[in-house]
Image 1 (cartoon, one colour):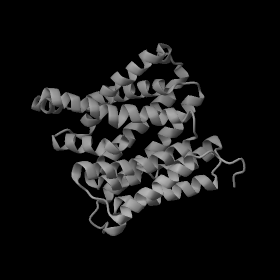
Image 2 (cartoon, one colour):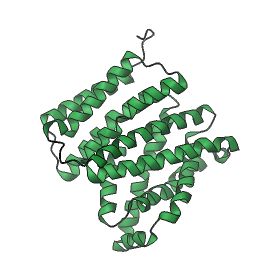
Image 3 (cartoon, helix red, strand yellow):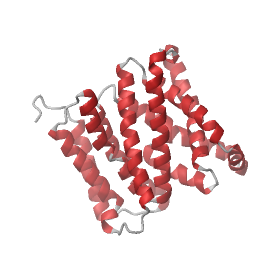
Image 4 (tube, helix red, strand yellow):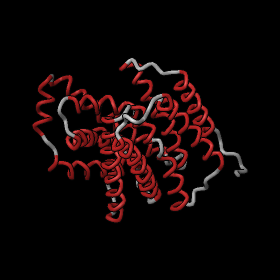
Length: 283
């Protein structure tokens, strides 16, 4: 789902939607499906302690930073390369998880991380082309997105350990973000975009918010209840560039080369290795 973000971002940007307005649309609309999920599961999830707010604010800041950086990278460099730079998050996650939570950095995690990231590099095709024409700012933005994503995983994991549910973390994060972005949102741009074809554009905005934010964040945060943050981020790092590669092939007719296909195989191997049960004896 994260791999589909480029399709929505480029379409909205090409239709005159600026960066902050795009994020407001993504997050404000996402409140609806997340709130529905809460009402259908447990309405008590709305209740929080005041002590939970600092972590929610950290999550909100990280989500804004991640999306601003990632959107900028997707608009200035190839979609698959932007996804690869985001996939650097496992490096930050493994370090943060070790320092903050004492999660063991095993040889298995390191091998899987290297395989997944190298596979992602192959999938982008950057090893076959020159990078001199790629804007440095786009590359820096992509790395920044990976850093923000890693910090978000740490903050959300800590909040879960404090007893908060995935939906609680997300609903308060998006509410804080929507309020903060309101003064910087150009509502005239939204009106112009919707006026093109109200039915289709509104549906497009709903799909954009649901598939670029609500569902993938719910799934990724929910995964932290069952697997550690390092494993979660490595699985994400292998899946997203592959998704971006497939969307490029299906929508933009970008046919993968032999090296790109090898990258896909490496990433799948890394994800399969991670999915297997940890052995009782780790290096």
